[in-house]
Length: 155
Image (cartoon, rainbow, N blue to C red; front, side, top):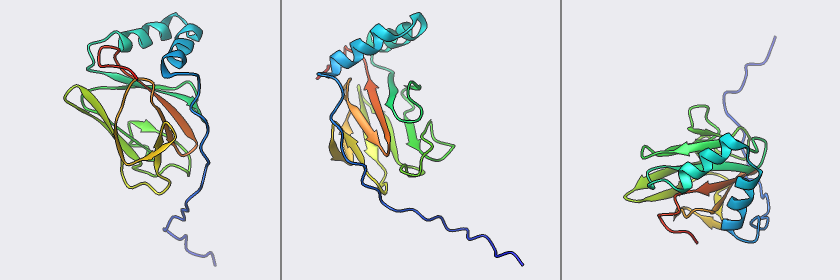
């Protein structure tokens, strides 16, 4: 007789270690991405950077989905391992409802939703932070780059 499948999920914390924030500066990293992009990708990056600040982009630059990009609009976005997340990160190091990004006024705000492994922005553990173009967000094994309008103010 087969044993009934346990409906509980086993999860544990995992120390991933911090890596240096890539590039010499956020502006240089974004410039490098644009210089290596094809025509279509350049147009997407430049539309966000030169835009009115009503949208932003998350670009995965390290991790299993490297190169994926996600548009963040005034509705905001959810980040997590749940397939219902706006930004779906398929790895056990990511909580189902790990974090969210929300637009408040002219700024995009990052919020960790009490995830098991936490979130890091520019190598600092954070629960909430106003995002600035060039911020590197680490969620589990994924390194995400936040790209916003240059009209909102860069680092």
